[in-house]
Image (cartoon, rainbow, N blue to C red):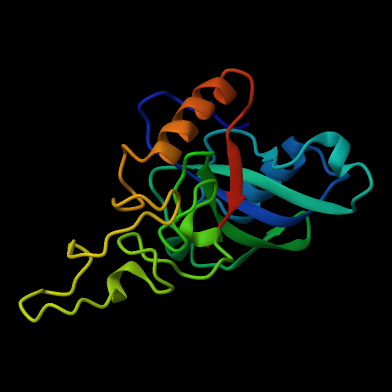
Length: 191
């Protein structure tokens, strides 16, 4: 049986896609322990979605918690065999309403899950922040450049999109405080 997660101990979570839903979580845990003894589980895996959403599915995704700060690359496998079925291994990414994407500059998803076009955090132009063109010859032309025009893509004010004093970010922080008292954090898949 798996140990419980201890506060202060390092751990890393992964997603396993394609796990058969008729299996019990202890069966899944035992299969992982048997097939991959080098992967030390800190707790029994859990389903990523609710039981109701798994009802009409033959397979779904579990969250697997391993000891230490093990990385996907160090596991050495892209897929794991769980109860004689090959399941895809992915990193587990947590995010919330105020997580800001470094690609499109909007909030609510991490960069690894972004499907939007790139937008500069400095000028709101249609390019990555690091590719922001600056016309001043003395500029280093890197992400620290703050030469005009500076424009927040979220509120069109003259500050960077990641400015903590942006009115849109303040609204999200306020909303987040209210939402976290009644909602669980959002969870996503790997990049």
